[in-house]
Structure formats: C-alpha cells, structure tokens
Image (tube, rainbow, N blue to C red):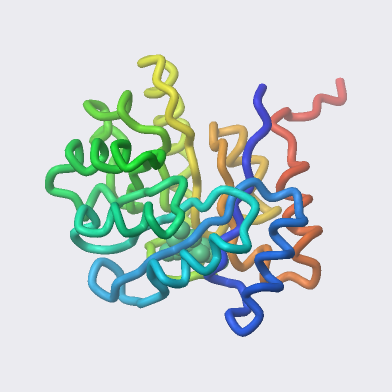
Length: 225
Ligand code: DX5
Ligand code: ZN
C-alpha cells in the first residue's frame, strides 16, 4: 500500500516567524504545505491570500496544497496558480458550476480538489469523481484551527473510498480538521491518504516529531494472534 501524505497547515504556525516555520516543514518528513485561504464570507474568518502564498513559495521545497474557503473561487484560480499553488481545492458549497471550475483548475496546470463541509454528503460527487485529483473531507466546520474532530467524517471517508474504488477513480482522499495522533490510524484505515494537521503539529512542543509520528502511523492493524 502506498504511504500516506502529511500536510501541515500553516494556519497554526507562528506568523511572526513564518520563514522558520517553513524551514521546519522543509526539513521534516512532511509531504505538502497545506495553506488555508479564508475570505470572511464563505467562512466567518479571514486568513491570508495570494501575496503571502507567493512569498511562501519562494522558500518552500514541497508542494503547496491550497484550500480555498472562499466564495466565487473561479475568479481567483489563475492568481493562486501564479502564486505557486500545486493543488487547488475549492468547496463544493461555493461552486454553482463545479465541473467548470474543476476544468479551469486543471487547465491552469494545478491538481484539482473539491472539499466537502461536514453536512455535505459524499454521494453528491458521484458524477464528478473521475475528474478530481483530490477530495477533501472537512472533519470540522471550516474557518478555524483547533476545533474538535467530528466523528461522522470517518464513515464519510469510508463511503468515499468505496466510491473511488468502484469507479476506478484516482482522487486522493484528504482529511482536514482536528487531525492528530489520536485519530490518525483510524482515518488511514477508513481510507484517508492525506492527513492535514494544524494545531497538533504547530502547537505541540516538538512540531518535527509530531509530523514524524503522523508519517509513521501505520495503515495496518497489528494482530497479536
Ligand atoms: C480549517 C482549516 C484547517 C485548519 C486545521 O478551516 O481548513 O486546515 O488549519 O486546523 P487543526 O488541525 O488545528 O484542526
Ligand atoms: Zn484546510
């Protein structure tokens, strides 16, 4: 089985020492940088935009996984791609013409992801799953770091994994919100392939070790019989 990816979310990083935080991720066993863009409209919070992402790109040695929690994301695809996004994920709930937006992301040269809020059923992706490079299951309500993990996300991941397998699709399953050592194995067993972690990495005493532990978590249930 292919090893899962770990994507630390810089939302929980120390913005005053962003260069040092980027260096930490570069030198860790993390795979991607997860970057959360919030507009104060789609979610009740505002984070950062393309200029900050372009600055991060000058230092980052790993792909930038950009999670757009914004209304009308189609207006900004080109700008985020230009800023250095390697994966661009838009919310299902923010796209009236999701198919078109996904094609626009792909035409920009980025990988295309779609995120589902906790209340949005996985089944709504049935007619687009083959077009996607990634599906992000939100395991908290988007907008803030440090929230409590919503357990209903686990059956959603299983259902999505089944849909992808049955259709022979290639989309990666990413999970975002309240992810840490306490639930990583359960998420991987359910079918998650990319673990996003903000607080459990950057608010820990040893972020590098926290990343390593997430990376070392096994898919297998150890049998002692
Ligand atoms: C929440 C963001 C997450 C956030 C996760 O809206 O999409 O990426 O950074 O933070 P933690 O890991 O602290 O729940
Ligand atoms: Zn995110």
